Length: 193
Image 1 (tube, helix red, strand yellow):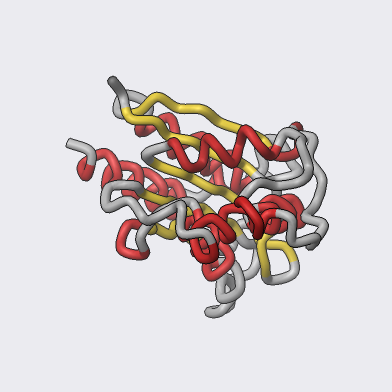
Image 2 (cartoon, rainbow, N blue to C red):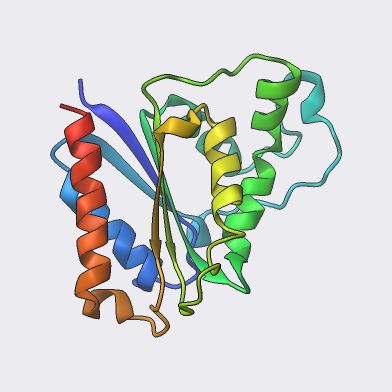
């Protein structure tokens, strides 16, 4: 049976830079995985309430479209998460999704019912318009948290950080960015052989 890859696009724009980079990555690994792509902008879920309900049994009190996604994150072999950088962090849709992962945090760190999987992988694709050196400084820890609570060990986290992509279609015009995405996809595919 094929390994499962869950891809989550958090961009509010269809075919923007992070979404296009994600699509190229998925196309490059489609022969290696059973792929499911989810677009958060089309997924109705509410933000975390901070109520602490999940600390009792690891279940979120809100029963919305986030719940099946949380289960899929735990079940997949590879979790790919893509976000544009807005105001030096992940976009609002990504942050809202990651905040809802508090239930996974409770399972892992309070209840000890989720542990890291030696073979599970996480890939973070981030695109930014700016080119200064620390433009991704606040995005990678947030993505690392997501992967950590989903059961990915630090050594199995991969970061594809693409800067200088300001206009909606700049990724498709950047050979350097496309090469970086394709190389990362090749690296992942080789690890699965």
